[in-house]
Structures are given as structure tokens and as C-alpha cells.
Amino acid sequence: MFDGLKDKLSGFTSDVEEDVDEEAVEEEPAEDDPVAADADEHVPEGGPGEETVEPTAEAVASPETTADVDTAAEEPPGGVEPADSSPESDASAEGDEPDESEATDDGGSRSLTEKAKIMATGKTVIEEEDLQKHLDDLELALLSSDVEMTVANEILAGVEENLTGQTRRRLSSTGNLVRDALREALYDVISVGQFDFGERVQQADSPVVIVFTGVNGVGKTTTIAKMSKYFEDRGMSTVLANGDTYRAGANEQLQKHAENLGKKIITHEQGSDPTAVVYDAVEYAKANDVDVVLGDTAGRLHTSDDLMAQLEKIDRNIDPDMTIFVDEAVAGQDAVNRAREFNDAAEIDGAVLTKADADPQGGAAISVAHVTGKPILFLGTGQDYDDLEPFDPERIVDSLFDE
Image (cartoon, rainbow, N blue to C red):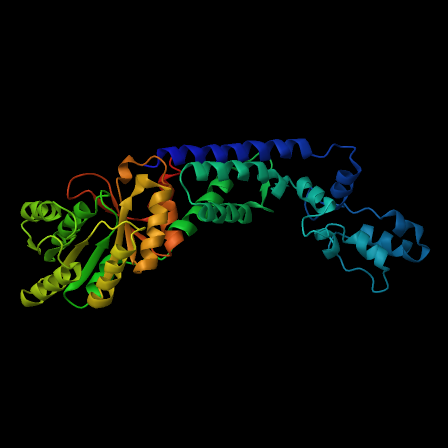
């Protein structure tokens, strides 16, 4: 699942690792480099007991400070300076503590002096320019995997924020650092709005009413049957309601699932009011102590105003405990756009993505939650009634980085 996206993310992490490592080698200061020499002058190598601080030219040139400098040179680093020591002498004796003004340049990045000092300690800094080309490549990889544009930008911003300015030891791998930054950015995007589905059901008054929306042909009716099995496995009874009264054969399709599962189904004649069907199912559940009502709706196209109005009517009159949007993971950008439109018509509480086992890209799975602000609850992973997996953002993200 999502193997194509996994390969692209792997390529990004390895490319960044190689380039940053090459930058570290190229930027390693030569022995006669005056900047590096200055940094070496101020960074002790052998420990606090060694004499590493030399008086600066300015300090030597000042007669008033010569005695103070000599005294400082005789004492171990960290010793107390005489009270009348000049500013120049103080700066010389405290060379291993960079002045606040040297820490950054006017643009907020590290100064050359600080970079040299960091490198002298065996570390290197990951700069924004090190990442830019790779961020551009990552953007193309995400978009080609059907990740929605604003979602891709959010991921890129997260990666850049997590990596820029990070330090690491030279000759050690940046791979873990890059993977962790990308993993965190992805998790932040796909974990939007997550809640405990089982807990939500348990806290609702009985019967719990769940309405399913989505276009025709995406596996909505089969998902309802899978949800019935899901609740049965947890000791909860269900009744199915066929609110898809406009499509020929819809009654027969849901009826077949109901027979296979041994469940009661509430239907009306073709063309009947979908709201009335769901209402009758709720009344049946109340009269027969059924725990959950699972209501199908017409496979209304998000471009059809009259059908979307029917969805709004169900939401207004039935006031379901949850409205769940169903679409195919393989639909990519179309699924994302439809999720946005359905959420605008009648606010959804979450989504189920079918055919996830056949989706090599994963763009819809990454994008739907961020675009709607509502979580993906389940993934359909096959044709059997048990092929319904709770959506675990952490597990999904980890799977994208498995070796």
C-alpha cells in the first residue's frame, strides 16, 4: 500500500543526506584558513586544563591591559579576571564564548564566525540553501502522488522548519534527521481531527445513527456492510437503511449484503424520499432495541445541487450522530475535491477510503483529512467483510519509512 509514495520519500531522504554530507566535506576549513584558525584559537581541544587562549593583537597593543592578559594566560580557562580588566582583554579571555552579536547575521542565519566554530567542534549546519533543490523535488514527488497542493505546501514548510539550522556531527549520517523531519511533517498533516471512533459510538445515545455519503461506484454500499460486520464483532446490533432510492438496483444490492450478514434492512420504493427511509429505520431500531442504524444515501454527484439538497435535508431532519464520507483512495485529487464539497453541503465527521490496497500513491489518504479538517476513520483493503482497517496515522507514516 502506497509503495509509489514510499519510494519517492526514500529518494528525497537519501538525496538530502548525500548532498549535505558533500557540503560538509567541501566546507571543512583548511589548516591555513584564517577564519578556521581563529575558530581553532577559541575552541579548546584537550579539555579545560589546557592553556588554549592567546592574547589578541589589540590586547597586546594596550599597555594598560598587558599585565592583565599575562595574568589571564597563567590561570586555567574559567579563572576570575581582575576587576579592572579592559573590554578588549575580556573578549580575548572569553574567546570560546561567542558574542551575542556574532551569533547571527542581519538575516537571522548563523554568522561565518559561528559556523567556523561549530565546524571546529566536528559539526556542520544544515542551511536553507542545502535543502531548496530537494524541497522542489519533494514538492513534485508529492504532487505526482496526488497530494493536494495546499497539503504539499504544508508538508514542505514542516520539513524546512524541522531541518533548517539543525547541527549534526560531520562524518555521521543525516539520514535519521531527514527521515524524522519528514515523518513529523507528514504525521501533522494526516492526523488532523483524529478521535476514538469506538468511544464516540459508546458515548452516543442508542440507537446510534450513522449516515454514509459519496458518489456512486466508490464502494459505499459495501462499506456499510463492512461496518455492520465491524459492529457485530463488537457485540452491537445493526439495521441497514437504503436511502439510495434513486438508483435502480440499489435495494437489491443492499438487500444481498443484509442477507449475507443476517441483518434487517429498511427499504422504500424507488424514488421515495431518502429522509423518510432513514427515519423509519431509526424508529425500527428504537422499537427493537437495535444499537446502530447504518443509512445509505444516493450516490449523489457533488456537482448536482438537487441531490446535495437531499443530503442537507437528511442532516437537518434526522440529525445523525455521524456522517461519514466514502470515496476511493485511488481517486486521488477527485476524492479530495469531492470530500471538500460533501463537507460543505452537510458537515462530515470522518471518511472511509476504499481500495487502499490498490493505491500506490497515497495522495488522497494524506490530503483528505487536512482539506476537510476531519479524520480518515477506516481504510477498505479488500472485498471481504473483514477487510476494513481502522486508520492509524502513526502506523501509516511509519510504513512509509520501513526499510
